[in-house]
Image (cartoon, rainbow, N blue to C red; front, side, top):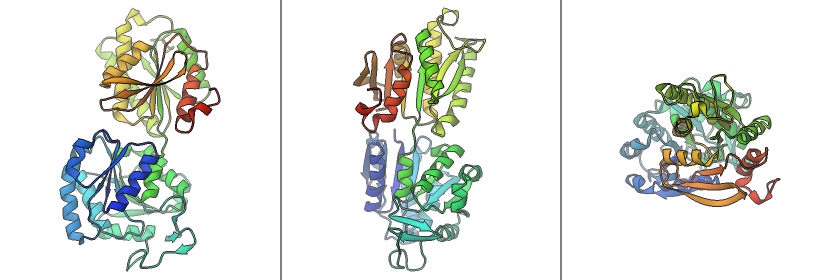
Length: 411
């Protein structure tokens, strides 16, 4: 299943944008055929080159209408990114309008700024290398690529955009602004502005409910946005509970409690949905969570399973994890209790588990193979093993994994 589908109007734009996601750890491909998406499911990001850059506005719009028919089946499960040239060259207005209308987006985030200060918008004007103003030939014949110009261009396309000024971005107003649906053009100056836009947008709405429009700067901010982790206490062993408390006390996770009242009945389904409802906004904001079952007196399940119903407990935990994973992207799982880890793997339809490395004795890094979450890392730990900081060490491993895990402070 794709995490992102990028739609670019030329080959260079498709490759440059795809490269940002590749650098962010995504498995990425570029295609010229929208009908080929079904054969590219092993990739988490696919960039589609529509070759519409030099077309007339009418021709480009018609091509995009045809392309969106092939994209529509992926609408509810994938984040769409429309790559545009920072100087607004090409058919930006018609193409954004068609994608928004045909795919049913009512929230559009637009940020044209480049990344790493190679191109930035300052006081409404695009600059090269933050020194030299872009010439009319570099941008367009008629206008400079500013947030105001972007707003005007998209208004001409009938999108009724709103300009969001740099001060509003830096004051943390993005989430509040995006509570209202519509098209917003952001006046980003640098990489941190772009990251703030992404963080604010993800607080307001799931990423897949937004049409993201921009150049490689916005793509990089999305690709490097924090993907949170889900820790699951999948056993009643007291040691796992103590390890979970250490994880919370160190500020790594927010607890999401799931009641075991009515275990094995329809009431359990209500608790599952309620826990997922609580977890979803936390994860969307980049907050890692600890999923732990509680007794009727709201204490963590410890020592004995409620009413001795081990199967009901495992089903509740695995079904809740599957519900959460179906709602939002995560960076990885850490599960205490081998039986629960197996039950989760079955629920998410993994074909097998690939062993990646032994982190510590009895603590193993695996990845899910096959199914909709192919490649997702999962740390599995026996409920009875490890010191009280074992789960803290697992989180530190996750955080250092994309750098050099062997240099983690506890390795």
